[in-house]
Length: 278
Ligand code: SAM
Image 1 (cartoon, protein in one colour):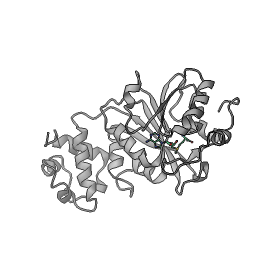
Image 2 (cartoon, helix red, strand yellow):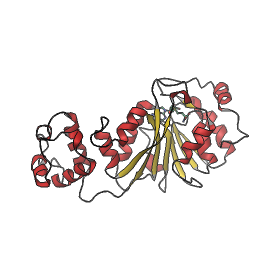
Image 3 (cartoon, rainbow, N blue to C red):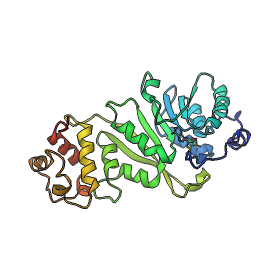
Image 4 (cartoon, protein in one colour):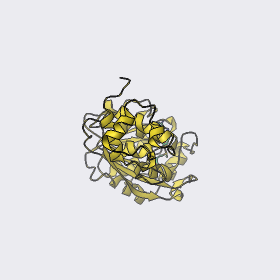
């Protein structure tokens, strides 16, 4: 629930002149109940640290603060900073706002512990941010990710082998974490409404499998899904050691990447071993 003493978000938008900018991927959420449901996805946030990318006028930020979180928010649009400062005044010491580009800010250095990441992400940078968070060192610096994506991207994150949406993003998202769609979100929930539907994805890190280098996995999935309709013996030809590894672990080289499960990619990366080019 949002705090009754706070002005309505639409009033904040009007007062600070926060007309939605397409270039900044601005599609705002105003529905307090929906925002509270998103803030509840990571579980009890009382006194937990949360990183929010792109707070905008602060709708989701309000819900996170109301849930008891201590929020660090990175926002690129300087027009939003005074509106967020006003919100911070309602929750003294609980909201830290950093003006900047989330792709350039060293987020891990902002936290002593492991924050939950909760964001209605700008669509143009969402996938790049997620891939960065997934491929950094493990155990990761974050405790969980609750992220809004276009439905099509959410489907790619949670897809299984054989699904149309299955590819590199599914393997990177699932080889050492669990990923699920927490809730679909209709396009009409946003102002302005985007052209496509959205969904909130929840990602929780797990133990990394032994003997698997993320660089090797990335190289294998790039090669295999770069030519997803080709047989593995063709698409993996350029990855040193990959064809011998396929044979060693008994994966039929006439299969295509889209049929190879996350667990099989993990086994393949382990069999290839250390990245051949150092
Ligand atoms: N959280 C708000 C909500 O749910 O209503 C706004 C979400 S809007 C989809 C995305 C927000 O991310 C905008 O406020 C935009 O200015 C901000 N943004 C866009 N690119 C960014 C970047 N590279 N770094 C940080 N914030 C960014």
